Image 1 (spheres, one colour):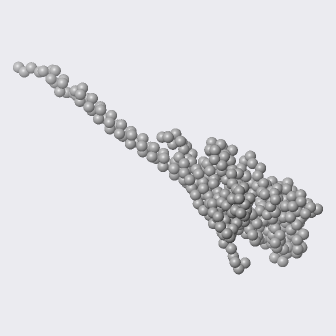
Image 2 (cartoon, rainbow, N blue to C red; image 1 turned 30 degrees about the horizontal axis):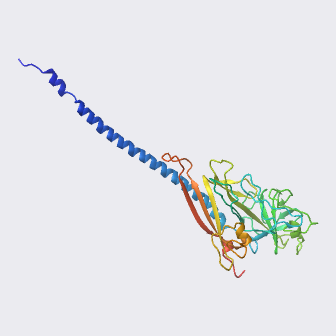
Length: 365
C-alpha cells in the first residue's frame, strides 16, 4: 500500500516566494519601460502639435502681411503719395492703431506716403516694445473711375460702373476714396451712398473730410474742385477730369488689450475694427531698406534719430519716400504651456518684402 506525501504535492503545485518576487520585478520593469515610452510619445506628440500649430499660425499672419506689402503704393499718384488736408486750419488725420491709442499722421506733412513706419508704437509685450506700420494701396476693383459730377461734398459715378449692384466695385460707407485731377489729389472718407452718388460728410472717423474754402488748406476737396480744368457735369469719359480710386489704408500691430494673456496680430483697414490674423504673437519687429542714392542703408527702424538726421541716413534725414523693402519678424508662442516645462514653446518667422510700386520704376512713363 502506497502513501502520499501531501506536503510535496502542495509544494510542487505553485510558485515559491522567490519566484513570485522575481516575476513581479520583471513585470514592474516591463510596465515601467512601457509607461516611460508612452509618456515620451505623448510629450513628443504634444510638442509636435503645439509647434505645428504655432508655426502655421505665424505663417498665416506673415502671408497676409506679405500680400498687403507687395501691393503697397499701387495705383497712387507720382511719388506714391496722396495729399491730405494741411495748412491753415487743417486738423491732423487719424491713423488706425491699437486699442486705446489715438495716433495721428504727421500733422506737418501735406501728404501721406505709401508707407508710414511706427517704431515702438505697438504695446509692450513681455517688457518688449513692438512696432506697427501703415500702408496705402489702390483697390484694383475700383480704380481710376471717371465721374459724371463732383459736388462740394459728394461725387457721382458714371453709369458705366454700377456701384450698388453687389459687385466688387460697390462703394460703401467706410471706404476711403482718392480723387485725382492732374497733379492735385485728395483723400476722402465715404459717409453715405445713394444710388450712384457718394457723400463725404464732415466729422468722419479719420478726419479726412475737412472743408473750409475761406482757409488756405491744401489736400481738400475744395482745392481739387478749384483746380483747372473745371469739373462740369457730363458723361464719361469726356466728363469731369477728376478720377476716383478706392484706397486701402491698412495698419498692422499687436493687440495686447483685448486679451492680455493672448496677444494677437491685427490687421486694421481704414476706420473699421481690427481683424485678428494671427494669435499668440508676442512681437512684431519692422525695419526698412532705403534708397537714398548715397549709402542705401538697410535695416533702418525709422525712429527719431533716423528722421532727424543723426541716424542711419546721417547727415541727412531718412524719409518714408525712400523705403524700398520692408523687413518683418514675427515672434510667436504656442497657445498652451508645454506640460514638461510648464512654459510656452516659442519660435520666430522673418521675411523681406520688396515693395513693387516703390522699388521698380517705369522709366518710360
